[in-house]
Length: 145
Image 1 (cartoon, helix red, strand yellow):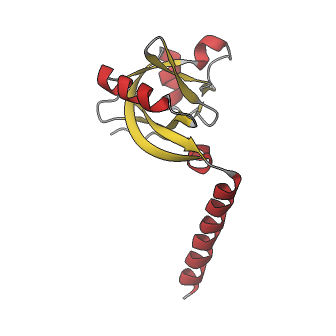
Image 2: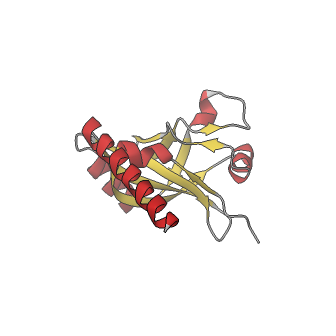
Image 3: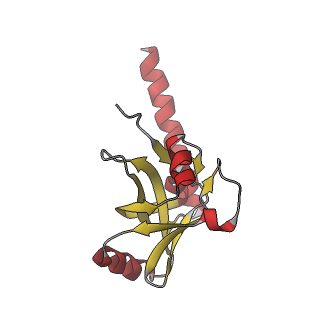
């Protein structure tokens, strides 16, 4: 039985309002999939962008691999209809494509969940922190009783 591999981008939900989510395949080399299986990948500063009607993931940090520019970009695999839909939505001002998590599906393939997102303002971020702290405080009070 496989270990559940789930690499999250924790900064994405704090910095962006996520709107639509898509699951895409990844074109990886052997060392890259090896670092994903050992959970040595960082996607906190990653972003997605189009290059000649193909979607690429930039600034992925595979920690087992020596750093060079070729290893920091990964091609994403999506249907043509999905690519056109994402491209149309990302052309709007203030909209970006952000990776949320990398996981291994039931078949053993590495997949990535991406989202169309809109950036939060500073007051939105403060509100998020405030609501998170309120939830923690409530759970502490409930735990005592």
